[in-house]
Image (tube, rainbow, N blue to C red; front, top):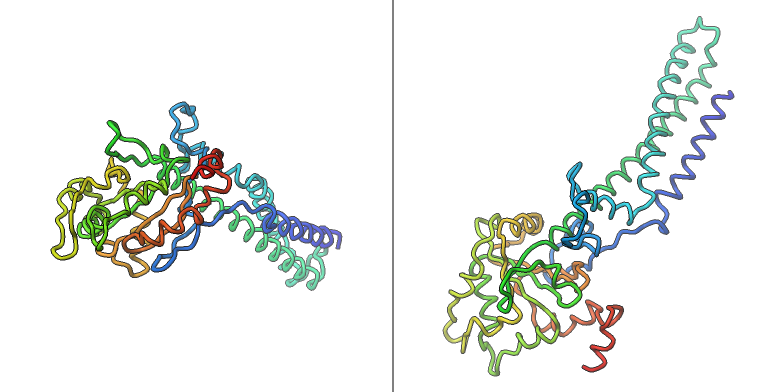
Length: 351
């Protein structure tokens, strides 16, 4: 009976601690990206949130933080620890409790077998032995579930952080830069709009920025400049598995008769950057392409866009060509750079 009482008390304690630590909203640090608008596609938001300052591509970082174990660097694991400081503690506590519950279950089953067969003087009554088995099974199941769920959440968080670091390190070349720069260099100053698709998608994007398609002059490039948006077209090949020569395709774009007037592929050069290091871009976009395909979208013809905020986080994902009018009209409100970005008060007071 004493053993029974101790096990019951332990079970109650584990349930209390588990409910407080594993499921308390006060300890939740997960941030979700905005849902896609219009013809957007759903993604695992936790996977694709871009990184914050700890993942910056800083050349002064200690080399030891770049050492990888278990598929993630020390820096990434430290970032996950910062975002969920009690996760490691919970894993130790509930992992040990799970092992202890299984050990107690083993001895409870032996006691039950002795009580059932009879002939053992030290064996407890059968009903008491069965009750102990039930308590240990419940304790093992609950502690095991909490441990597995927390471990799984930690892995998802690490994948998100690693993906953000990968995004920050992607390199592009702009018209006014002699050397390539990383996307992290645009942080704080510019938003980045990644538009990926097949050859015709890239050509259509080029015409929408560099040709007069309405009765008046095309003002999209100046609108992008005023909204601090840098467009990065990405040419997908081989069903989205490979990133091709985007700049060459961009410059080979021809106007559509009766639609495009005054096409000049350099008209939007101040707001367009081209991918450098195609293998790294293909590796990053692989999961995005697969997600869109699984939801029935043709990434080659329809394409998709990813809008990155000034703070480096994903603002929006959607399929198709960028909806320039809607995008530019709501960019400041959606990004919120007027509300909390250091130094923007002075900038927007004068505008």
